[in-house]
Image (cartoon, rainbow, N blue to C red; front, side, top):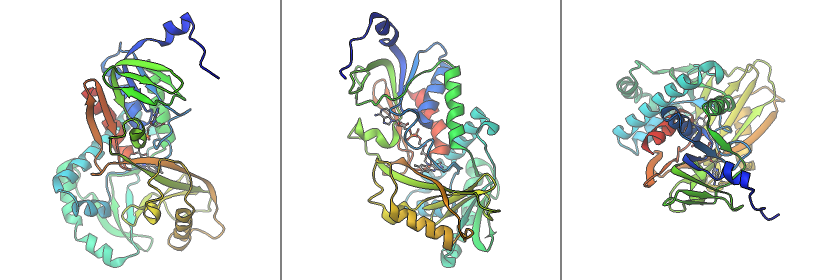
Length: 367
Ligand SMILES: Cc1cc2nc3c(=O)[nH]c(=O)nc-3n(C[C@H](O)[C@H](O)[C@H](O)COP(=O)(O)OP(=O)(O)OC[C@H]3O[C@@H](n4cnc5c(N)ncnc54)[C@H](O)[C@@H]3O)c2cc1C
């Protein structure tokens, strides 16, 4: 059906210039709108998303509130300078504190359970153990916490324990933040896919000819950014997750990483286990912004649940889904002006729970 002409009343209501438009209502976009409005209470702020609810990663992730495992940090130290890694740890830690302080632990089911990294390769475990004193001193310097990593075992698995991590409920995280945005008077347009953004005039438009204009723009479209700005180098990466049906007294309680973080799992309530990851099994196929299930990865994770985690016989998947992450080349997010009054905040590279809110806040200050 062709779009009908707008009425006089519609024109008056909807064709207004906003002070700020945010494209993307994930954790980054909602946070940027929230902190901008907090600083400028009389500003007209509009958030636009293509989904009926945010349709990327923020409500589809595993809810790990993590700042870095030994395996991940050592892999990073082999590729990047210590300064870059220190900055990232501090960013994640401060981001997590800001998220908890802003939303309240009780509203997001925050559990400070710590994070385990388990190993089946004992040579790798011994090699990584040598790094623990260095990583503990980095942690102490950057976040002021002593002896963050402990060397030990979980069940019979050689492991490292990170005592400052936790888990939360991603759905409740976004719902609480959305409610705060509504309470502060921020407007929303859902189901509106933005196809074009003119960063000189700050005119934002969709194929259905709906147009919005603002003094300032924040683009928080993460993995989908190159569909609007093809020159921005953020590669999509699909992530797969499933939750089991109820299991009688599962022996795994807390958040866990395995194989440099490529596989992760946690308890959900008292009787369910969430398992996700495995992108390394079929990396090329998972470099996509299409949602869907890769059967090869699913098979790998199911075998991992049977053979390594030894879930009780007869366990079943209750629900499975995918989400799309946005990866930059350097693994560090992009926060930059793409024009005079237009800021891009995207490319959280798979660890956005700790980073997203602080990135949004920084974007609201930069714009
Ligand atoms: C399966 C999975 C598990 C994960 N697990 C964890 C975890 O345990 N811990 C952790 O820290 N991180 C995890 N992550 C990563 C984390 O979820 C993300 O880094 C974070 O949510 C990114 O937030 P964002 O707001 O920047 O992007 P998104 O949440 O992806 O939001 C982008 C929004 O932009 C909208 N959008 C895009 N293009 C357009 C357009 N053209 N017009 C209008 N709207 C548009 C989308 O609909 C979407 O709502 C996981 C990710 C996945 C996929």
